[in-house]
Image (cartoon, rainbow, N blue to C red; front, top):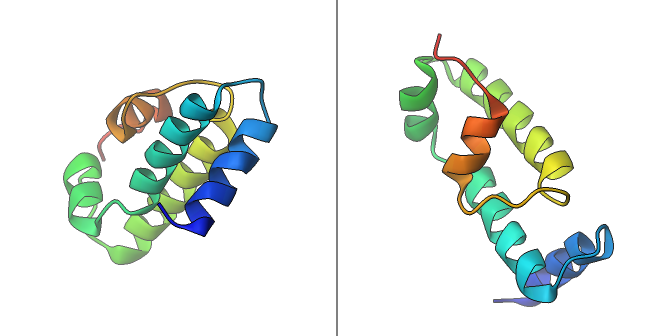
Length: 88
């Protein structure tokens, strides 16, 4: 874990009344979401255009940034289910 990770975890923790461990877990889920490959998103969505995949990734990251500080997801896959994207 680097200094950036620690700072991001603190920001998540400061936005809600959760423990440091919960903040760390939520940060890791956000990090995993941000690093999803285009191939994974293509499989999940059915889209192949990078333009479409980038838009979906951006929407998913925005959703997760708003929801994750308030709701706990164990993995990015749980967050994806909550995101509710329907395969195109």
